[in-house]
Image 1: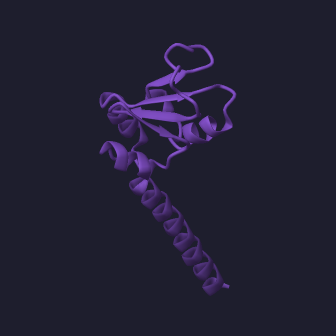
Image 2: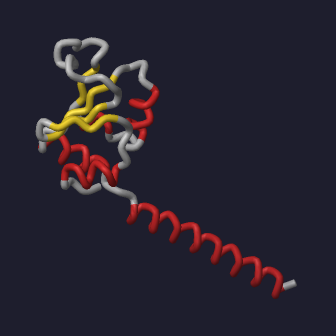
Length: 115
């Protein structure tokens, strides 16, 4: 009986340690999307989109809650600024347009910012 209790305790301890390690590893390797968004904004990167655009929602979700830090133009309200925008989402950086949903890695390559 005593050995079963000891084995159960060791297994529970091992599971707890494994779970804690996974959480720590996940937190250590999670990109810093807040700083990435700030870098994009400081470099003058702009995203153009529309509230009804599903692809824009997908793009925003890639920032995991940090999209508020991105410079964004809502084209359904600001037609003048979106005159040359023909697809959503569109990113603008250094007078160049990048159409479509981009991975964080692609945005890193385009801008030099890192997540």
